Length: 254
Image (cartoon, rainbow, N blue to C red; front, side, top):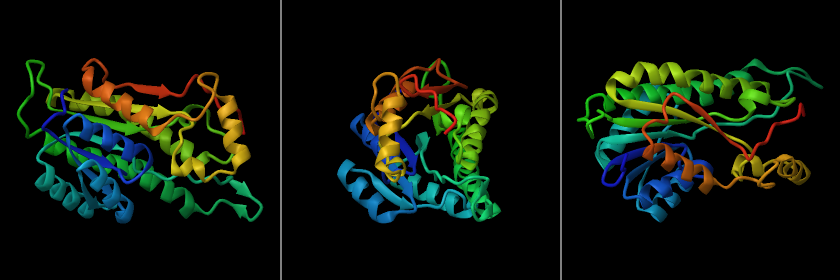
């Protein structure tokens, strides 16, 4: 898909992977709406790329619906949705204070899984009403963000890993269901990337993760994630797949 002249929505577009993706879409001629709860950062990113920032809690059905309507009013009908909104708590199931509080686990699932599904269902519904773009009948592309933690999550990642495993499991059935509308669904499973979430870890932990990545032995950059989003848009045979973007990293048990 050539995004030039078309609308695109990036959930969690204020910073990190989402901000880099929004910038790449804008550089390719897309009209980009950044949806985020952090409006200060979202406005700053939107101004830098010529996009629009819209406040949105992806877990709120009515609020997300209104934010998507506002995005469409601002940038036009959206052919692309990239789900980057998420949280990454690190907490053991059984910690020194006892069992992990259930609301901590529920929040991770709610933001990472329910939020992504909420955006997928609402945006895909609008995509079904668009004209097809080509002889294959393509209407749009949805990219979700999983993680290598979905496959080899470490100690302390039970909530995060299960949320990202759910995103991986959502990919194929969603792609199969939306195929009749010409909507592709792909998930990216990043390894360790240079994001605000990862930069919150202690420096020794960051260095350990860098060394654990076979090649290149460093953190991935948000621009490399964004570059792969653009590759997905450009290759229609990428559909229903979860692709690891991790430099051959396999996480140890932690």
